[in-house]
Length: 367
Image (cartoon, rainbow, N blue to C red; front, side, top):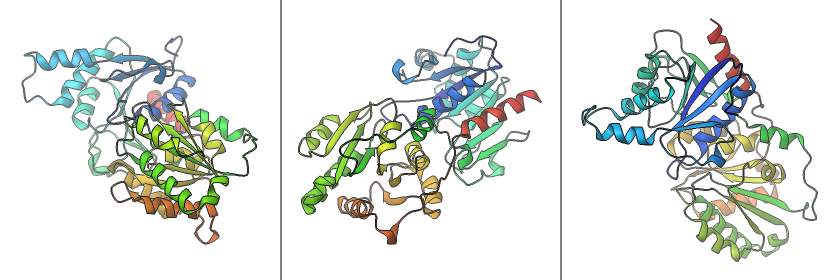
């Protein structure tokens, strides 16, 4: 994918993936990158952290860590120099000979100072953001949350285009293919299939919490052992893998999947999906699954609240409030498919979000 011949433009995407923030930012950026590549753009992924080649899906990657550390230790910048501006300088150096047209930013650690420095160097800026209280200096702000950005916080003098709402949800092509395919036919098709996935790192330990809840559920309702099967996805940055394996040894109905390329096929066959309030939640809703959501960071809350109002999800609560008995209650209700508490399974988004974003980039470039 890094080979660029007769392309319509070049795009740099500034994003991170590591044990602290997981894979969510990178995953949605790669979904957008794939669409942009199909539409004629050449893509470069820029990061401060080293990202495994297996995660990059063939896109060209530039790591700016050595440059960043070298400049931070030099006398070029004063000690109180804004770290955003230091990062911006490294990014600008990395892309200066690449004829970049657009720079995409998906980061909560980088903001308006970074955006303004890069924009003033002649680049158009697209920012992906889940918050509504941050100022931006961008040509486009993008979010799949159905709440507009505050215009007073959009500081670029020219008009900033807001691409807001679930029509701009970034759904990976894996999920589109899986949804259009047939559900696997196995001898266990009569079982309720539960899928558990809390991202690449799961820093709050939700996977362990849910497994403990399933253990309690099976102890209190032994018949469910014949009625339920459980798939557990463990991300590549999850530091609790050994604990998860140990807990799962005593749960015959549980199967572990370590760092799969995509959740698409697992979600296709799932009935109930336990996850956090990020990208995976949107993918689960696209696949029209019963989603049991625990928010694990502040950036997820707005999106979850909007979907809760639509009656599209079950919301268990914020991670520090969710207890084992809460999960057990919601699981039992979902397994029984209690008609008095059914959620709305209508399709909340289509698969065209990334394509709509790509068209807007081209439109702005043509002016």
